[in-house]
Amino acid sequence: MNIPVPQINALFAPRQPVEFIPPIDTQRKKKKSKKDMDGVGDFVQYLETGSEYDEIMKKWKEIEQRPERRERIKVERKTMCDETLAEKAAAWDPSSYVFETDAYKTLFIGRLNFMTDEHKIKREMEQYGPVKNVSLVYDTQTQKPRGYGFVEFEHERDMKTSYKHADGRKIDGRRVLVDVERGRTVKDWKPRRLGVGLGSSRKDRAKQTKAEKQEKKRSEALKARAAARAAREAAEKAALPPPAMPPPGGGRRDDDRGGSRRDDRGAGGGGGVSRDYRGGDRGGDYRGGDRGGDRGGDRRDNRDDRGGGRY
Image 1 (cartoon, rainbow, N blue to C red):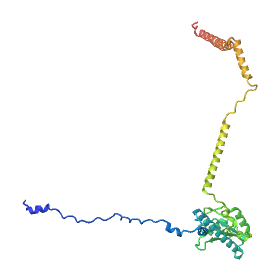
Image 2: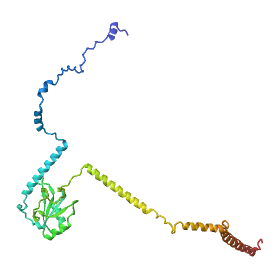
Image 3: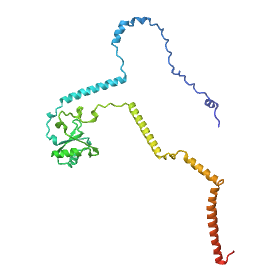
């Protein structure tokens, strides 16, 4: 294949040079030189004197720390709450309300399940007597039950019976609280929402800090360990055998026993008494005489009777 030379040279010709683009300046600009620093002599005239300083410090208020601020807010809120409750308690007058029920036949029932309705309460309370009316208290804004209500019976004796036996009864999984209607039966009675009532949560009780709770737990644990240790030591002491009591007369018993043994051995010629006893009774009389003499003689006689024997 014949290719002209100019075309071949065109294949090896260099490309056009790349256009030069200046780089982006990413370095920070050089900081300007600092100004010459002057002294504080020019500002001395603005400083306050002794009398002016005392006047300023009289108006100075210390900076309030966070715990102090929390304590101040807590005290302010408690004071405001007490004032509000005092105003409501002074304006509260139960005699101004008009009730159609009899106070001595009406029973208060609280701590109800929020899903419990009047029919369920009536069915539960009819076990103590005929119920005339059941009314639950609802929130005026949300129209949701507040968890308490009133039950009116036909007879006063039925109300007293339910007051004695219905307290703590389970209704829809919750134990209810039963009490008489004290608003119209007890003089100068104030409800719980005014800070009185019978609730224990309204009493002034000092709250324990975290450190006090930990210290209380630690002391209880130490007391429990000490009690367990004392019980274990008492059990071990009861399991031990009683100590051996010394015999009466002190060491005379040992001396007498030892002396008698020595006398017996000496009288027998180095233990002759004991050997005569053992040899005479067991070896001489019993073993030698009884077993060797009597039994041996019997065997020989039997053999002679049976076949003449060897003897």
